Image (cartoon, rainbow, N blue to C red; front, side, top):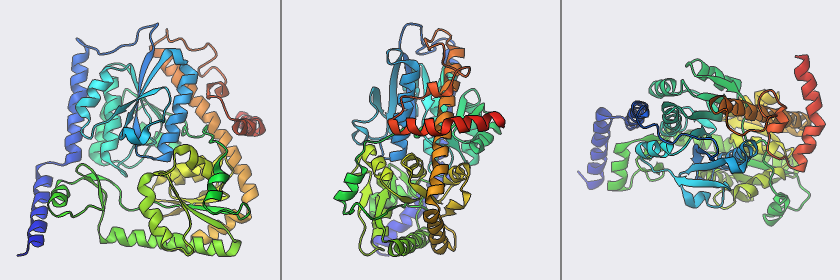
Length: 503
């Protein structure tokens, strides 16, 4: 038997032993649960940091920063701006978790960045004890689609804060399908938290677990980039005349990320599974079927890109909303001649990434936040989605036909048809997009009012302005709006308010 066969045999045995002995995700969840129970027991004799009037409120933001994920970073930037507006800088001390401080350096002004270790439960318990409250800020908050470990971390942060009778709020997040053991963890340790979800479907899922929920929205809606998008496009070959069409592909089938000790052993011993390695003992989903589906998805995008470019003399760009998307962008670029420029977040910060979207005319995206961040710039967008987030957004916008599935058998032809429809009706669609932006700005203001009342109920001495809270005007709960967003609000807010009153 040659060495490679021996190594593969060893890897298979190691995987069987690992699965039989323990599931790493469940072990992580059990560790987190044990620390939450310990915090609850210890609270009576040692409650940890508790807020006192006259001192800054120490709030910990728990999320997915430090991966050059444009959407995750933009929504947290705007969350921070809203919190500062509501609490006042002198009354607030913010900390934020980051997976890689080098990747988030220079982001999140006024917030102290804390490096989240890969093995986080004990560290997280100590960190939550030093704060007065937790705000879970990741968009994909409670779902198994991406990684149970991420949902466990946010559940742990919220559960620890709740066990110590502190503010524990999920802010603008989403819930989807969860593995049974993760769902049980969420149901048990988030039952005394407040979840302000970004859509009604998520609220129904969490409400069904007995978790208090309110409906809000995402927090990226208030972001406006500097006016540099056209300059970025010109540097990449745009002539200033042709319509700009962006494609934002992903690695659509390599989720969820799961711990796999067998793969980890095989990687160390033989170098296998390097392409699917995420971090530590965590690996993306891989295999021949994953590769086949990804090829079909990229082939469909390439067909639509070529067809639309040739019909409309369009300027194509490939847009990587997260550093992880470079592989998909490169693979799509190989299918197109001439090769389009790549605008990817591992080389551009979030201001440049969103600015580029604002200079785009038509966007085909598998990234939820690429659609959200493009809309205030009046780009017309279509989604090719692997989960419910883009579906929910397109339904909310009144254009459910513009959400296609990554594994649809007729994706190539259907995508061409939808792109042609969107381009033909783009002016009418832009009116609907603007109304959707303003509707979500108002919802974000309503979220701020919910948060104020929630904190005020537990800390009546918190020095919020008297006009803040759900008795006040939602628009007063937003951070300062840019001239573009303020103009949209002024153009559409009165008609939306009239519609709400009539309903």
